[in-house]
Length: 126
Image 1 (tube, helix red, strand yellow):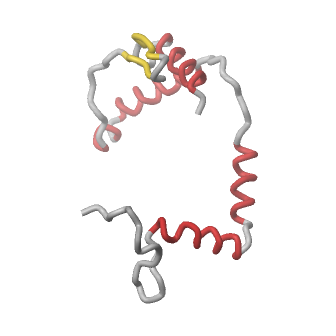
Image 2 (image 1 turned 120 degrees about the vertical axis):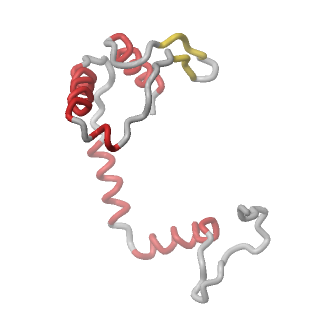
């Protein structure tokens, strides 16, 4: 996540009329104040109406046609390589990772009882 890229995309959508106006930024908090746009959430029935689908497609086409000056890093290759390494991890590595996470995830032993540190400071939600 790159806040400067997000800001550039937001401002481009705003300028093109496919997003709310930005009324200001609170740089110290990393937030922005946006224009309020009256509306409602779409429901499944709404999406069955051809006129609604056409309007959505038209607006999405405008968004995808925007020329936004942002880095076009190709991240898919490195992401897939990372996933492949994890998928090909040995059984021992997987078991070691599970044993480290077991107490945190409330792992159960073979009798169905929770295993892990009995002196944990974390109390279950009521």
